[in-house]
Image (cartoon, rainbow, N blue to C red):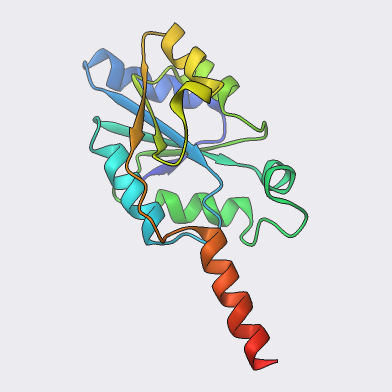
Length: 162
């Protein structure tokens, strides 16, 4: 089971053990609101890229800013606990910004993984990762699995019942 570490400096210190041992540190980030199998597959694929997976979770405030006033559905502490329970996740932390650049400056991953639905050249965090000698990698996107499509389906079912 992974650990939830909110203090980025404490997280960086924990990662030094992996770095010293020559292990590959992988990071990823996202909202992970209404955790589903697409998330799990994505996280497993990210973990397969290295020896340690760090997941940065958008805060409730950041999620509302990115996704709108009805989100998140699941509060940040619960989303973090769910992610930490996955065997492929080593560490989970929280960030308030719209992008994980500040977090990545502190944890300096060897690899930063993003879903295949992102254009890597357009990611603002790529510059930070590459400046510290890391690389940004695309993990295949599993079509048909997204929180948006799941909540739309739920909305249609509820509307049909109404």
